[in-house]
Image (cartoon, rainbow, N blue to C red):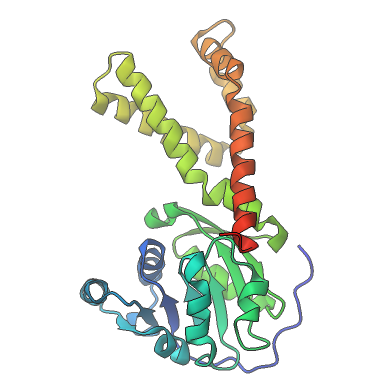
Length: 281
């Protein structure tokens, strides 16, 4: 990672964390912060749908206001909006931000340069690529600093995202690859699990039995990867007896170029992230 830029000279304002956007990821971050021990009165949320406002107020006891009001009192603003809604969100908060406010974006494909262009000069921004396992506190988030972001800002963003999983720092040039690997990655895993469950049904297993077998196998394999530290090739070879059932199955996967298909799919995801970043829709 390159050296951190010089910190902004604007004083840090004291205030709550404002979460702008209360969709799935916004609520995930909110609930994670509360479980991590952050007081509810140190959080404020913005949301436009009246029914959603009522849900959040009843479920968490959090204050829900509009974008400008939330941004105006916060020391950290977290943008959890769709990429196509980012321009309007930036317009809402631009005049309301106090000097020194940190802006953290969870929008896929939105670069720090885009964020900085829509905010007051010198605003520190952090770009984050999260993923949906944050819903169960097992998320994987990659963060990248903007031009005016210092190490303290990055540490603050890390603390926020660590409330619902793990966090790593990466240079922004890697964010499209991160999107393809961990951002979209849960969908690939669900896709494979779905196929394995269907295979079990095809082989005569009840669907519930097949599901339990596959899900626990996935959980166990992931746990082995994390806890043993072994390379996946080593773990795969431990299951692959010569001329055995596993080798027969893996031969079919190789014959159908499944590994190459995964590589091509992730390249496509990376390319789509680049398109979003360049404003190609």
